[in-house]
Length: 345
Image 1: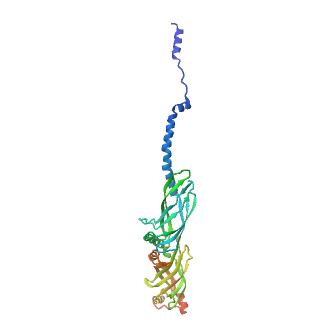
Image 2: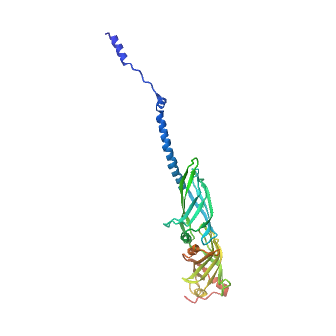
Image 3: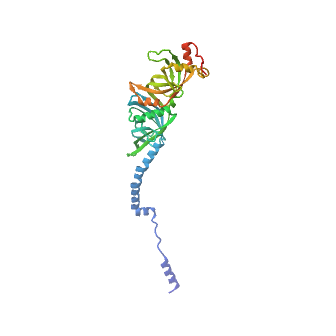
């Protein structure tokens, strides 16, 4: 065989047909069923996970991040077993999630007491997730737990500040999703207290030798500061009156309605045993450097309103002594025309 024939045979044996490129379109056309299955799996698994897990967590987190500001609490129509409560507040959030929070019952309790026994229950209205939401509630409130409500008033009277928690379970509806998601509304706020009415002053005082028609031999005006956010319709309050640890009489303040601020001024009257007062006015330092100002103390004795005895206010006001310095020299001068001499050192 010639060389030319060998070359021709060799070339014929090594010539191969080039493969055709199928491309993306061809691949998808062949495996479309696999992509469809994957899409179905993603839809069946991921979407429910987002709806059932992610969205509720986001909704709860947004609710947790919202800020509750308490503007005021107003307690009126105080009765032995119930009262009318108005709570004015503001809820602030980032407003990024558009949702509606359904109405719910929220309980209020003192955060720093371990039992967290509610002292009041409020019906909160439907609210939205707007960045600034005013929430005002006014309702007739039955006292379900007298001990817890008395404790709340006692803490309010005695403390400078204390923490109160508002909590309730509700549902949230996120815009675009038909499902309702359970969430818990829980906010703890710092409440300013009354500090046992520190800073109370008595002025425009007058003394009589004999009791008047109401049994009073001492009258004046009391300015009582209210550093809290709470307005109280207390009613008619009666106080034990002490001087140097000895009870010397009873003080009466009628129609006591305390509003936040320092401009709470009320007429007061008292029936005072005069002998210990006169003796103190003749002793130093009360008759000289103290200028006739005696250090009295008051402690709650009895509270009534609308003819009903209010134990929750009575016990709160009786939980401690309130110190009040009263100028006795001025009314003595008005009565006798001169000061009592300093007879004791």
